[in-house]
Amino acid sequence: MKLHASRYYLLYVLTLVLLVQLACSLGGNAMNTPEEGPDLAATEAALQETQAALEEQANQPELTPEPLPTDTSLPPPTEAPTEEPTEEPVVKPSSTPEDLIFTSGDVIYFTDFEGSGDWEDGWSHFSIPEMDYTVYKANGYMHVEVPDQYSAVYLIYDDIYFELDNADVYVEAKFQNMNSKNIKIISLVCRASDQGWYEFSLLSGGLWYIWKYFLSTDDYVLIEEGEIPNPNYDSPHTIGAECLDDQLDFYFDGESLHDGSITDTQFREGRTGISVYADDWANVIVEFDYFGIAVP
Image 1 (cartoon, rainbow, N blue to C red):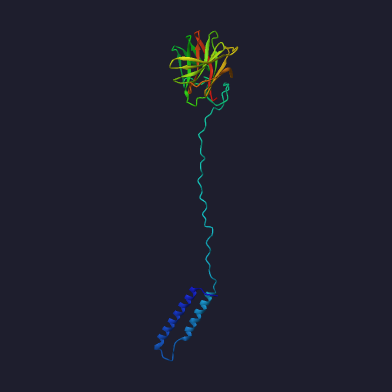
Image 2 (cartoon, rainbow, N blue to C red):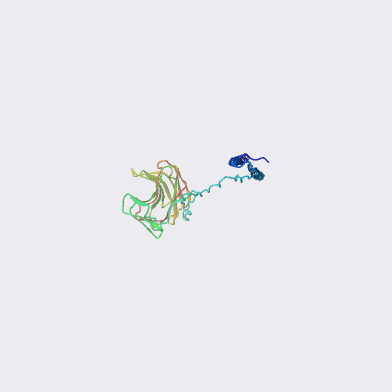
């Protein structure tokens, strides 16, 4: 078995120490008498003990250090839980009101004049020409009285202004004539602004009209007309108007009127509303059961 270099070095040192001790022993005994001489037996015994110790050490098995762990990878860091992005809830009506006949799109606004504040909040009203008139809500109806002939009362829903290129709407109202002997006109308005508006009008005798009204000149321009045969005007009815891009369509009791469609590009944005007009009879009274605005 071969000794390591460190073991050879140790043997060398021990041998050197023994030789030094031997030399000192010989030098120290120089004053002895020749008859005594150096103690060679003791030196030889020491050398034999050293040799035996070295041989025993050489026969010991080599110690190998414990191997370091080969997998020194660290555990993956614990990632903080990422929160899912929350989206703003999209507010839509829970359902289309049952009374509203037109149901092709989402309802934007609807009132049946039952709750508190659904008339006073968001609405404005005026007359053409100016006069004293009566508008109030009672028993789930909007009550409109027009005292003067050849006069109109307008109720405009101010809270929603449909901007340019985003003014496509369907408007609908349910009404009932409260004094059957009067000749009157019920109208829906779309795209009302400081320029004017479109007006869809139904005469009590069954005639209908589509107008353009110019606010600056107070002029009504007729752009389409027709007739509904036997409308039974004293019963409750619905009137509807669709303003879709440059297309204008008139509806009665949920049905599109024959020839009640025309194109026009005069008005492109604005509000919606309802109107009551007294023709050649005064003291017109009409009640509205509901008013709704929907996406066409």
